[in-house]
Length: 64
Image (cartoon, rainbow, N blue to C red; front, side, top):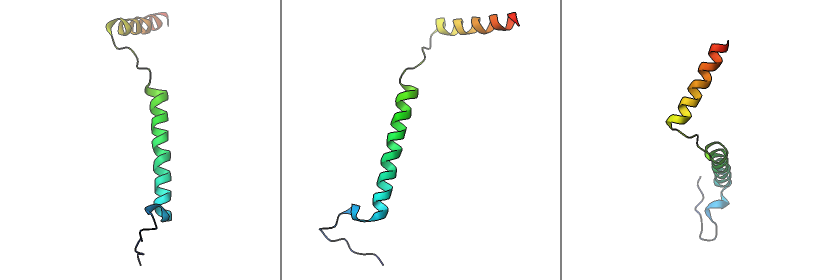
């Protein structure tokens, strides 16, 4: 049922291993692409930023 791998044949001679390796490489590339585009510039988290956001929402609610 299982063939014994000789020294001349590598692990990538098995088609299933090649397919799994290609899928794994594609997934890693997609994860790093998403990380680069969505998490490269963090939003500042300080009191000034928060107070500006709160005042904007209060002003829009009062005008409606």
